[in-house]
Image 1 (tube, each protein chain N blue to C red):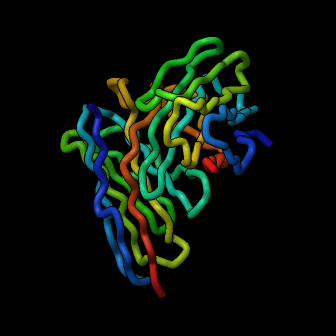
Image 2 (image 1 turned 30 degrees about the horizontal axis):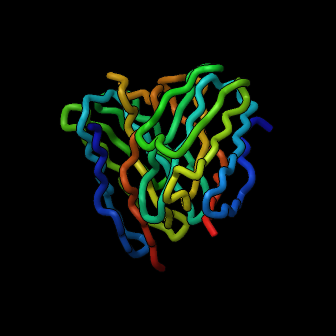
Length: 116
Length: 112
């Protein structure tokens, strides 16, 4: 059974600080997805990591993928209040490449609160 | 604008009643998915369809049914057999089976 584990599940941090969210998964997969969810809202795609060693950056967020370690990280640099949200990582079910044609398995999410 | 539309946004169900959640997309995507989200939890896959007239069970299909008669539409019925249906339901679609999924705005279902 595919398992996707995120930690921490809850994170409260101050503006201006740096922090990293970790995502471990239990199966072979060449790709991993990160999503953001605001309270009561749908999911917004942040990053699609397509291969081992992939690194993507958007503003203060940077995501990386290590397929050998089955680990992805989401790094937040100089956090600002607008980044407060819940962040999910997800891996494809079934497919060897992890693309998610058969749907995605999600972690439980990291609830991030950034305080002034 | 292209996108995924779910309706209604809020839905209330009485005990023993079947209800149907609508999901329509105009992105010309082949694959569509239904997920359930419980408070403080990640999403869990209910059903998915990679092509018209075909669909597969996900991880928590019991008590749910779907149809895929048109490419644009993938309705989800929550039957009376689903004992704990109160949740946030999200529909998604993919144009590239190996690419990212795009989500609708969700339907919040409450049993009264």
